[in-house]
Amino acid sequence: MAHKFIPVVWEAPPLGWVKVNTDGSFVDSTRAGYGGVFRNSMSLFIGGFSYNAMVPSAIDAELLAIIEAINVALFIVGLIFGWKLTHYWPYGTSKIRS
Image (cartoon, rainbow, N blue to C red; front, side):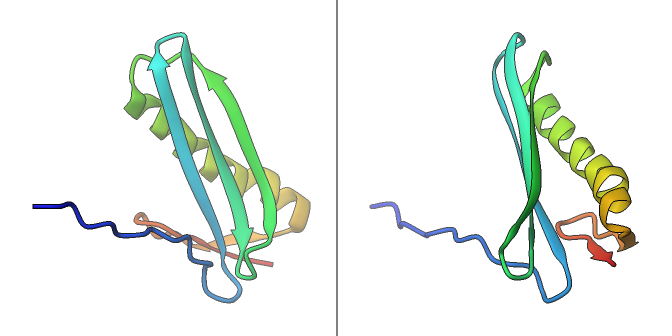
């Protein structure tokens, strides 16, 4: 049986929302990294981050990316733009209001 190709396409968040996509990468405990990209409802780049890491597993790199995304949303982006986190959804997008 042949495998079926299913394209995965990035979708913009609803109007007035900001979406962050994160990823972690792991080769071994000395070669790992993580990062994230913030985009608004018009798909415009708002900001991002990337770091090298020394972690014991891929899941640790993924978790560091999520933790840093939350930190950026709450502290850095919030301070610069005066936004406040109004809703937190543990399965995807959080709503940030100006």
